[in-house]
Structures are given as C-alpha cells and as structure tokens.
Length: 268
Image 1: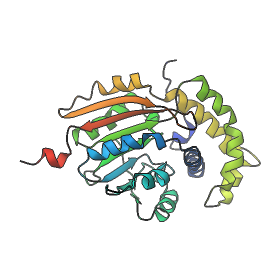
Image 2 (image 1 turned 90 degrees about the vertical axis):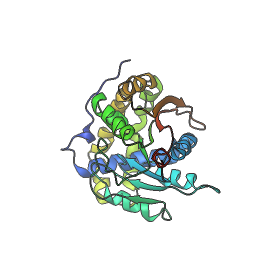
Image 3 (image 1 turned 180 degrees about the vertical axis):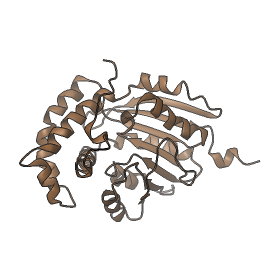
C-alpha cells in the first residue's frame, strides 16, 4: 500500500488544546506501558557517540514521549548521563513540567515554540523524533533532516506505526483503551473525563488519528528516498527496522550521523 497523507484531527490548528493534550497523554501511556522504544537504546547511544555534547533535543515531544523511561535507561556506569530537552511547536507545558519534575534532573524543556525545520543553534546535541515524523509531508520531512545535516547534528527518527494488517487491526481496540485510560491519566482532570463521556470525543478522534498515522508512516525504503536529496559532505544516513522484544511491535528508524563530532571536525 502506498503512503497516504490523510488528515489527522489533532494536527489541525483548530483542534481544541484539551483534545490534543489528551491524545498525546494516551500515546505516552501506551508507549511507556508497552516499552515500545526500549529496543532502540543502542541506536541512541550511537547517536550520542557522534554528538559534540551529551545532550538530546527531542523535537515534536507532544506529551513528553518515551523519555521518562529512556532518559533513565541511558544513564549507565562509564557514560555521562545525557541531558534531554523536550520541545514542540505547540508545547504541552503541563506534561513537560510533570516529566521534568519526576526525572531526577535528567529532563528539561523549552517553553517556547520550536520549529523542527529550523532548530535554534543554541539547542545542541542529538536530535530525536519519536512517533511524530509521519505528520510531515515529504518536503517538510526533508527540510527537518537537512537542517540537522547542515548543522552537523546527529538525528534519530523512530516510528512504531506502519502500513500493515497487524497495525490496522490493533486500532480496533483503540476506543476501548481510550475510554478505560484517558479519564484516569495523571494529573487528574475533569476535562479528560468529559472528553470521553457522555460523548466519546477523544476515543473517536484518537482511533481515526491512529489509523491515519499508520497510513502516513514512511517505510524504510521511503526514508531512503527522502534522504537521497540531502547530500551533505561528512554526513551519512542509515535506515532499518528493529524487531520488538516482548510486544512484537517493530520500530522503523532513520539515523543521520556526522562522520565525527563537530568539535573534532572543527579542531585545527
């Protein structure tokens, strides 16, 4: 099946902020409980090895993504614990503050809007995008990758959605999961309950957006085609898939790697 860039409701500027925050919180809960991104930890360590500082700038962070788990997992003996900064074009400050508060100093965030196609020079280190790259059309996706390559920043794109019967079939359970989970997510909010009952706005919207996310997701071959037009000397690309360990959910990845950390390249 070819990639289809259909309309996701929570992408729309007119989508109520409360709905968007509910759906990103549900995504964060599912990712954490299923440990979806645990298998890509070796790739994150490789990206850090190519960075000029032990820092990570997470783009399009939504509800803080998988960083509650991953930031802790990256801290290991003999390696400096990376500082992770959460960013988004529409920052969910409540989610960012909650994540940072419970991170033992590993997580921080940028309160201002950050455009993934033009990341400020002050935000250095590895760039990551989790479960968000499919939101961008090819021309914008390529601009995100080019901005990283031109500035010598390692970048990692990670997606667990895919165009498969398994992925589409799993979305049949999304309304039930949303009804059972969203009203009880922390911090408690009466608005989350009202978004599910008596009219199930968020369960319906999250199911539609989940189906569309699968249709929008780039395959490894499509990612390879995207980076063909991003030819920057001293920078290379890798694509592939990492199989799931316990949950059977594979993760598609794209890595952008400078040949050496920029600090080494700039040394004369």
